[in-house]
Amino acid sequence: MKLVLAIVNHDDANAVTRALTKKGFSSTKLATTGGFLMAGNVTILVGVDEEKLQNVIDTIREESHSRKQMIPTSTEMSYGYYPSMPVEVTVGGATIFVLDIERFERV
Ligand code: 2BA
Image 1: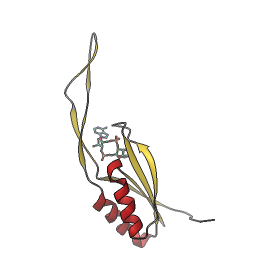
Image 2: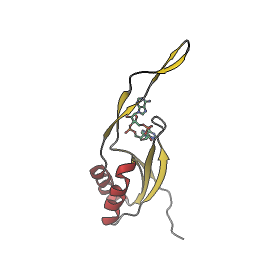
Image 3: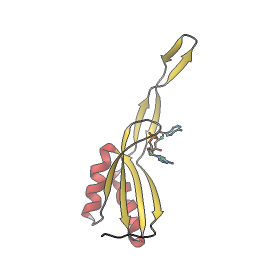
């Protein structure tokens, strides 16, 4: 068994879990925050048998969209910080990790 850990944009999270549920996959959503943008995103956990793993990854890919986001930067001057040109970063579709699961039980 595998555990899929997918970090997706907040705006895509419901579409991803809905599509997974429709295909019979159980999932859990966690509210998370990206370390770089310090903005909210969503981490989705899916426990799945290995033969269905690709189906889960394909489903997440189909429902996750990449977005361009502007982030403010600041420049240090002798008299303090002042805002300068914002920088554009491309976020997502999804960042996916796949972990081996040693044991899975529902008790
Ligand atoms: P954040 O850490 O907030 O990163 C948002 C986006 O900012 C990233 O999009 C990437 O385009 C850019 N970025 C991140 N770190 C950067 C850096 N040091 N320099 C320049 N640009 C940087 P994604 O790569 O699509 O990542 C989206 C979110 O997925 C991340 O949000 C983070 O929450 C998670 N993530 C991505 N890679 C990860 C990793 N290796 N380990 C853990 N979480 C990761």
